[in-house]
Length: 359
Image (cartoon, rainbow, N blue to C red; front, side, top):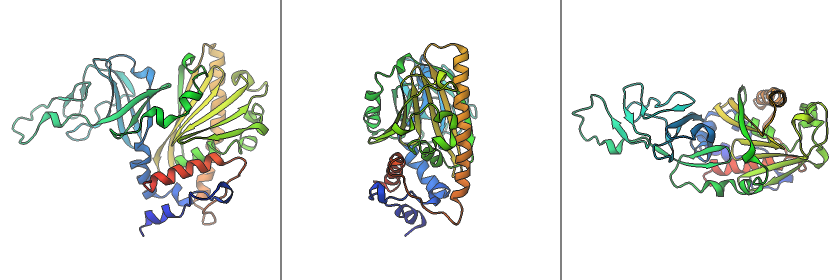
C-alpha cells in the first residue's frame, strides 16, 4: 500500500460519533494529502468572486483557488463565464488584477488575445505553425453559477447543479434578508496552519467560545447552541442575549453560522453578514478572506462591527496556529469528538475522507 493510500485508510468514517476518531494528524501537514486535496476537494464547487464584481458586460474578477488561477467574466451578451486564467501558449495569466473592466482578454506575455467568450482571436507572429487550430485553443472553461453574494465555479462540465449541492442553505436562508445586504469591506489574513485546522475550529459547536472568545461568549446563549447537519453543509445556531460590549453590532434574536463544504462560512445576524473563505497556501499555511455585508447602517456601526470580527479572528488565529504546531508533536496522532458539541467536525472529516478516497 502506498504512503497516501495508507494515510487515507487510517481514518474510519463508518463509526458512530461516540466511537469516532479524528483524521490523523499527518493529514494536516503531509504534502501528498495537500496535493490530492488541491486536485479533488478544491476542484469542486468553490466561491470564486462576488456577484457585485461582475455585474456589467466586460467586468471580470480573478481568484486563486488552492493554486489554480480562475477568471470569471461577463461577456458582451451579458452571459457569465468562467475559465482557467491561463493562456494556452505559455501558461501566463490573462488577467492579473483582482477585478476590473475589459473589452478583450490579452495575455501580457506574448500578446495572445481571446474574446470574452474565451475564443482565441489573436496569435502574433504565429504564421507557419503546423497542425494548429485556433478553435481548439480557446481558454479552458469551468462550470459557473450564482447563488447569494457569490459566483461559484466547478472544475468540471458535468458538475451537479449548485442548488442541489447547497441544499438546504438557499431555502433556509430565503427569509433572512440577504438580498437587503450590501458588500462593505474585505479583510484578508494569512495563518500558519493547515486550512482544515481553521475549519475544525469553526465547526466545534461553540466548544471553544467560552475559553477563546470571552467577548463573543457574552452574546451567545451557549446552553442552547445547536448544530444541524445536511449533505454538504451544516448550520450552528444560538440565541443571542443582550450584551453591551458587542451586542449593538450583533443584533437580533439568533446567530446562524453556516458552513459549506469544504471551506466557506456564512455568519448571519440581523442586518449583518460576515463571510469567511479559507484557502490553502500549502500544507501548513492558509489565507482567510473575510467579506462584510450590511443593510443600511451608519459608518460608525459598520466600523465597530468589522472591529469586533477582527478581534474574534485574532483570537482564532492564535489558537489555530498553536494547534498546527501541536499536530506535529510525536505525542499526538488522533483525537476524539465531543458527542454534544462536535458533530459538525466529524461530518466535515467524513466528507473529506470520502472525496480523498474517490467515493
